[in-house]
Every structure is written in C-alpha cells, then in structure tokens.
Length: 176
Image (cartoon, rainbow, N blue to C red; front, side, top):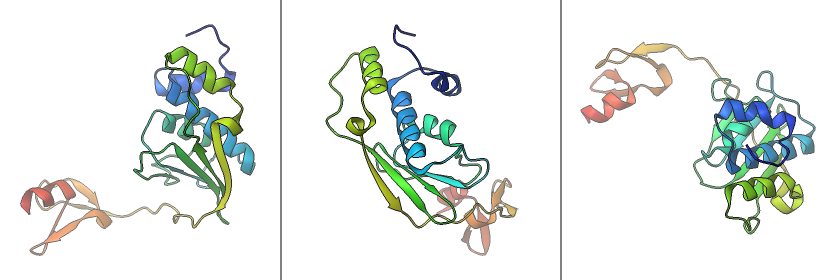
C-alpha cells in the first residue's frame, strides 16, 4: 500500500474486494456518508436497502459497509453508469441519495487520487440529499421448476413459456 493512513474500518473492505483502488475508497466514503446521515447500522436482514447505479468497485464497499446483498434481497442494481448510491430504511423508505460531484477529481495518479478521496470533505465529494423512496418489496423465496430443455432448476417466476413448455431464459433465447 502507500504512505497515507488507511482507516481501520476500510482494511476488511480491501480484503473482501481483493485490491485497494480509488473506486473502493469512493464506495467506502459514500456508504459511510449515507449511513451516518440516516443513522443506519449495518443490515442484519433487510432493514436497510441499497440501490446502486453502477457495477464498479465502489459497490463492493457499499455491500460490505451496509450489509446489503443480492442474496438477502436488499441490494438493487440499476445500470445507469452513475456513481449514485441510495440507502433507505424499512419500513418507511426514509433515506439518502449520495451522488458523486462531477468536477471533484484533480489527480490522475492512482495513489494521489486515493489520498484525495480519503481526505476531501464529504460535501465537496458528494451531493447528499434526503429522500423518501418507494421501497422494493421484501425478498421472496420462489419454488424452482426444471427447464424443459436443459433440466436445470429455475425460479418459477423466471420461467419463459413457449408451446406449453417452460424454459430457463438462456434456453428460451436459443429456442426462439
């Protein structure tokens, strides 16, 4: 790593992600700012919801810090390509939208950029807005049924019907 001080609570996130990079630090700062703003603790179940608008390294930090995961059904991906992260509490949907300001980064060197992200005031780094959102429903467990072509079990809500048979999405696309 480098000469700057890495916050103690960032170290396990680096281990989880696998390497240290500006995107991870950005997600760390976004999660920390958002969670502090809404007084949220790390989610044990589905009490906290995270909506991420990109699939960058930052999302691993959001996931680790918030405890929101795809498996628990409280991490939602919107493929907008923006560094925007919304955190909200169940059941009321009160939350915060944390978005990266467009003109923040002056540094091109990776280590200098990491240091800048770690040290800059969060209000210079992000636009932070209180929001109330309509929350996605709680995760539901669905029955699995076999695909008529490959035989692999598929969540019943994801089966595609054709000629009276049910197919997984890849097999459906191959048949159609």
